[in-house]
Length: 391
Image (cartoon, rainbow, N blue to C red; front, side):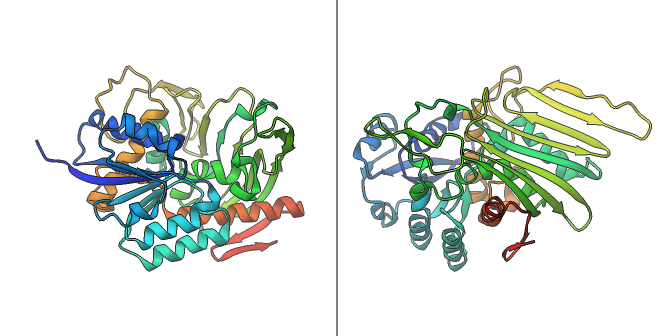
């Protein structure tokens, strides 16, 4: 049996997503054909209680600290996974990159466009450091299949695209406020910064960069209970709908991007719909085994085909095709893609869909900044690669 290369990881930010990564690493035996594996050896969080779970449940963890500089100074650590609030991204991400540690960071790669540009400058100054952005939802088998169909050009001329990520937990007005509802920590983007990369990962990977945007942003719950039980202002956008036009140079089409924290009935729904003149397809995590497709030839019937898709993922696993794919599986697949690319290089990956890139994160910042301007001016705002210009 081929010996697997071990990548020694440190985690900065020991909340929910840090625990998700640790759980994915402990399930690495679930993957059948990997020549690389992550091993978490150190964790960091300013709250010592947050690291206790790792010390109790992750045998490979050798130490915990409240100072992330200790992880960056540790020569035994190869890679950092960083999951901290948005206002900390610029400082910590830049420090990680400057220390020569490879990085998988959480979106949106900076609280605003200026912070993102700081991170991009750090990446440019350290070209040997591999940096990627976490975005696991496109690794669901149905979404992965659609991305392969897009790459093959199966759709013909694109008619329209719709992609989104919806939650419903914030429908409860009694839910206490958290950092994602505060501009100081989450920034002006609100739900766009928190969810937008997920909705944009496949479109941007497909070369569908918006040429302009008309944004409709909603702050639905303007107050929530604070730490003392009294209501305090909710400052960030709950829901966002972005109507965009895409111009690839070869074709033009509308694209609708939506991110919602208050979408009744949707616990954690990611979806992608692509309509074309020769083929159409749609997938939603609300029905994870169902993949819809509509092939069309001139004069032929227009009939949707629904396949109860098997558990067939980007990286082969022990799970049989009769079982359903879930969120924890998509996390594992994303981490497999990151470790695969880091160890084997883009050209040596065992499959073609890689994690979201810093360049794609920068594209989301251009779009989100334009969306804020569009909301403020009630107008359509044009985008270009260098920034934003009102139309």
